[in-house]
Image 1 (cartoon, rainbow, N blue to C red):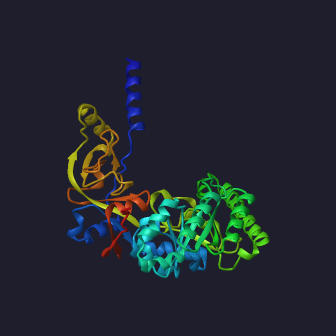
Image 2 (cartoon, rainbow, N blue to C red):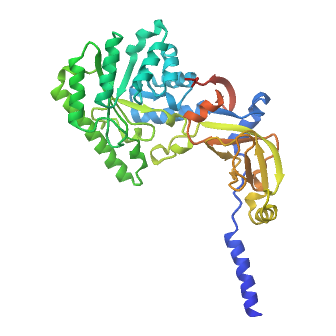
Image 3 (cartoon, rainbow, N blue to C red):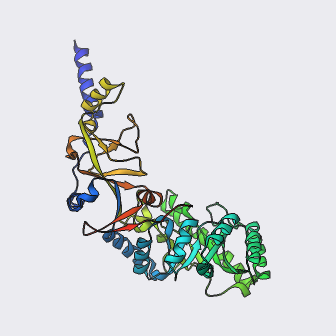
Length: 422
C-alpha cells in the first residue's frame, strides 16, 4: 500500500514537472494595432510587409557606427524591391549597389542610372555574354558602371577575350579569400599574375578594386574569436593592397573600391580601424530577418513580417490515424489546445504573433493551409491575422511579388519586387 501511494505521488509529481508551460499570449500592442488598421483588401490573403519606422531605426544604428554612410554599398539581393532600395540609398546618401543576379542587374541598369554596381559573385562567361546581348543599345554604355567580380586567372582570361571581341573595356574587381574559403585569390602569386594580365591589357581591362567577404566571422561562438578573425581578415586584405601599391603602383588609385564586410559583420569595423577597406556592404540588417539575430546586430529591430488570416479554428489537436493519442496530448500540453489552419504557409519564416503558435511536426507542413497549434491564451479566432517573421529577406520577399509599406502601423503604400525571370 505504501509503495503504491509513493508511486502515485511520483507520477503526479512527474506530470507537473514535465508538463509544458503555457506559452500563449495574445497580440501585443504593436501587432494588435497593425491588425486593426490594415484594410480588408489585404487581410484575406498572405502578404509580406516592411515597417519603414523600424527600417529608419536600423539606418540610425548603421549611421552611428559607420559615420560616412556614402561608403555603404547596399546589397540588392537582400532587399529585392527597387523602391525599398531607392529609399535606403536616399537615406544613406549612397549610390553604391551590390548585385548578385543577372535579372536584377538588367532591371537596375535602367532603374538606377547613376549608381555604381559591384557584382557579389562571378558571372560565368556565358551569362556575361547573354546579359550583354539582352541589353538595349541605349544601355550598353552603362556597362562602365559595373564592377565585374573575378575570382581566378582563367575567368579573367575569359573576360579579356569577351572584351576584345566586343571592343569593350571592362572594370574588374578581384575577389580575395580572407578566411571564408569560398574561392578567390588565395596567395600573393595568384594576385600578381592577375594584376599583370590587367596591366598588359589596359585597352580592355581596368582594375576597379578588391572584394573580400567574411561572413564566417559572425558565426564564431566567442566575441574574442570574432575580433581575432576580423583582425586576421583585415590583415590579409591589407597585405594584398600593399602588394598592389608596391608592385603595381600604376594600377593603384584613390578611386579604387576596396569592399568588405556584410550585415553580420559591419559592426566589427569601427571608423578608426578599417585599414584599406573603404566600401562596406550591408543589406539584410536594414530589415533584420530572423537568421540575423546575432550579437553584432543586437540593437537592430525586425522590420519585415508576413501576415496571413486564420481560415479555420478547431478545439484541441486531432491528427489522422493517431486521434486518441493526440487528444491525450492536447489535454496534457496546454499549447495543443487550439488548432489553426492559415492561408498559405511553409514560408521560410516562423510564427511570431500571437505568441505561442507553433508548426506541427506530427501533422506536417503545407504551402496551402499550414497547421499551427497554440494554447487558449493566444485568444486568436477565425479571420484574424497571424504574423510570421522571415528567416531571410531575399527569397521570401520575392515569393509575394509586392511589398506592403507600413508607417505608424498603417498601410502607406505597395511596392513591387524585382522580376526574377531569367
